[in-house]
Amino acid sequence: MLQTKGGLTTWKEVDCTIVEYNDLNINWNLGSATLTNAAKAEIDAKLLPVLADGVSVEIASHTDSRGSKASNRDLSERRAQAVTNYLISKGINSSRIVSNGYGESRLINRCYDGVFLQKWNI
Image (cartoon, rainbow, N blue to C red; front, side, top):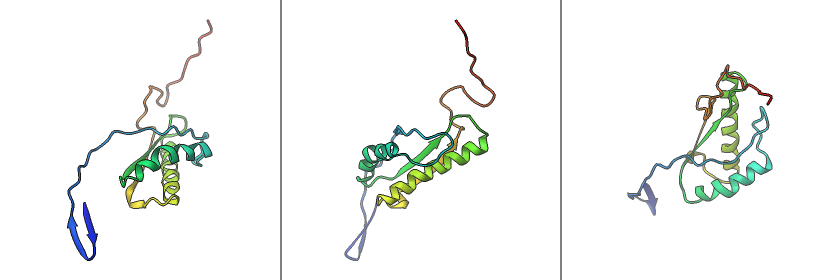
């Protein structure tokens, strides 16, 4: 880590660890990239304290498979940017944030395009 103080520039070795993703429980309105008050509270409670320690983060947004791949990619990018903009409004330097919208490219279930749920009456 490069440090500059009093006209002197030095390197300070720091322990860098890649951590796994930590999920934020943000529920978006269908087709929306506007943060709700509940989403902001989640970010304030879970993400801002981490950023206060000086770390850098990736904001990764995903969607389900409703809609086209292109529209889902765009939507997830707008959602990631909404979180990034909110963090910047809270005083976090944009150089510490990477935002990526992955759309439906990393589904965690098997509901990809063309898969429909069957309803069974029992």
